[in-house]
Length: 603
Image (cartoon, rainbow, N blue to C red):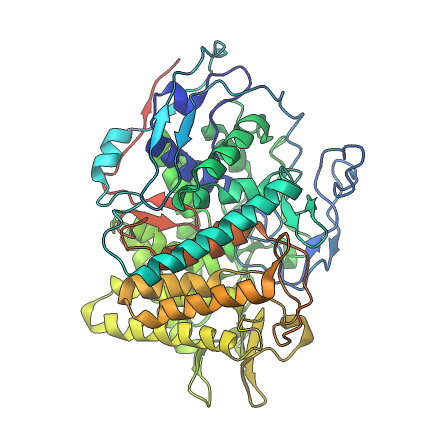
């Protein structure tokens, strides 16, 4: 999540438009997605790798041992095995970016103040008059202005729902998850505020190499979760920090539109497939050194569509849509082995580099964004729907298998040879298939709902068969083993959200009470094995009840895991699936019911 209201020398942006708190929340949602796009989608890590150094990081402040030493400006990143994780999509993959320039002056915000009263009954805001802001510098581009009234009138449900009659147990469980979020936030604020993530065992902050020199990742990731849970005071704390301290002054120097424009040079390849890394200052781009033959990654260039289309809708600039639609043209033109999409594609030749197919790491969010592009377009993007249908048909034909014990899983495909392994990262697919099933042809709707339920059940079994009732990073179906990790390097759990993500979608689409019960089992396991004195920590082995904690409260735990658990125990009209599509980091983007466009004007 990101709130950008005040830039150096400029009036607070949403305040200047006279927006109320719900309106500002819409800006938070969009800017959150844009931030995820810029510091995630183009910066992907391979299995079991992170990076030892940053590209062009800022110098460490004296006494900050977490800050990396600055390498030469053009130095290549050097991989290390900081974690055996095979990170899903954008979340704990490297967000490596170029130097962003000097940090902004920490001046106080001049925008309006909101006072939100937290509580289950709803948040109400009172707005005071803002002091006069300094005159803005002359603008060289047309700022976009969101037609809030038109958009708001198109929503079919209140953003935070109506909170009608509900069972006391459901409310109590939701309040428990809210307490977990507050506990995680309060400890982050106490020991790590302004750093990227909390180390709950040592009670200090972690900056590390994951976010390209930026700080405050947990604040940015948690903003919309705090809002949705109506933690008003905490939301204001986070918003205030972002206004004053979030170091994006160069990237967002004029408007958020400029940030999208800074990514465009990565598309300057013979095929238009973007390279994996871009220097936001110089515009130079290159592929990751570990990617075969300079290839780009499917889950990298395939996870731009939602944000780029929304950027065109808001700005009126078609270039963003043109870039991602060209990616589709390339993918539709190229021959696909058995109808499958391998994970590595050359941005120079437009040919596949390796025939490794995975619905988990390196491939996952490409498939997710196909069905979600169709949904976000209010079901007008028929090309996305067809691509999703064809891809799912190939996945079901070649990758979906059933174990001897009757568990349905999605294997990986390596040049025609199946690897009977399913990663935790692939467990989002139950929810994805359920979303697609809801809109499928009548003769296939129940089939795909059943498939989604079977995959979600398998992922639940990976939890149920562990001693902690939390799932391993990967589980296998070979040598008589089913839904269990067989390698020491796959036994850990780092507070991942994919399984509870599928529980949330399956609950919303079927209302089968078992999904809420399974979600509550996860809550209890998190409380018992991951909650420590100063936050929540991942564990290194889910098969022992004496946990060895990894001393990291991941930012995605607040952005996704707790959000999906909370929504699991909310009414369906809280961030209704009719009005909102969750991007790959669980930040909601609006369904385009009205095909709205922004109004541009010169200042």
